[in-house]
Image (cartoon, rainbow, N blue to C red; front, side, top):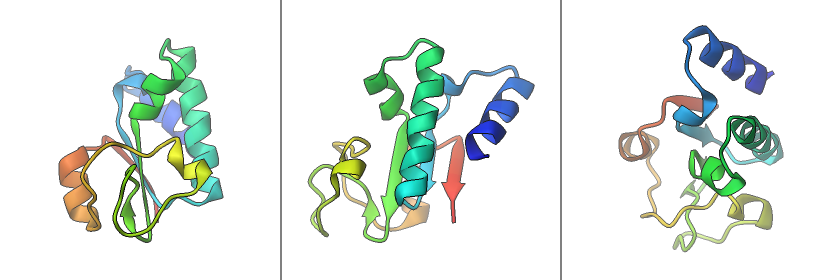
Amino acid sequence: MVVAGIITGVRATGQKMKDHVYLFHGAGEAAIGTADLLVMAMEEEGLTIEEARKQIWMTDSRGLITIDRPSGGITVRKAKYAKAFQHVKDLDQIVGLVQPTCIIGK
């Protein structure tokens, strides 16, 4: 449902999925599954898997999912969306830094 809503919204505005930055507030199995579907949709628009994953940012209970975050590791499923970026916990600060055009989650 989430991906269908995003696709509909993007098409209604004449934009492409690949031109957006997505921030997931929550990185559970449902969020990762949704992110994987977004990646597939962006691949259909011509991006590689790696390029599409760069458009997707995730947070969990410990903050932004980054490669070497100091406040706990990340699961294998989350690792594919981890960024080489400063670790930030505060959602408002994350939004300011990442500047997403679409926020998904709680």
